[in-house]
Image 1 (cartoon, rainbow, N blue to C red):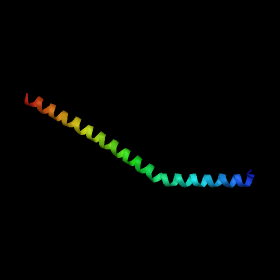
Image 2 (cartoon, one colour; image 1 turned 180 degrees about the vertical axis):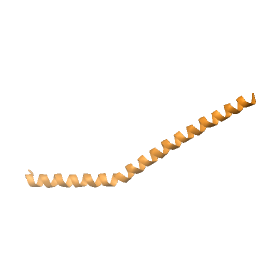
Image 3 (tube, helix red, strand yellow; image 1 turned 90 degrees about the vertical axis):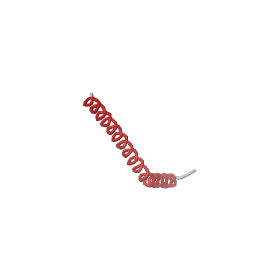
Image 4 (cartoon, one colour; image 1 turned 90 degrees about the horizontal axis):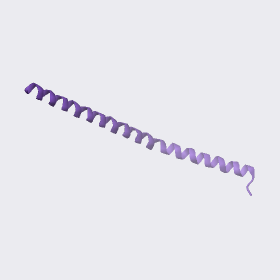
Length: 65
């Protein structure tokens, strides 16, 4: 049976290990967030370009008619 001191030491060690894992995972999470934001921005820019192009084409058709 573990003593209270051994139990607390094990608990502290587990907490340190968990903190180390969080620290190591943070850069990957930030990178994933940056990539997601860039992807979303690219998609919105692409859809904006497509809608602008469609508007220009329809405006040219109206001017030609």
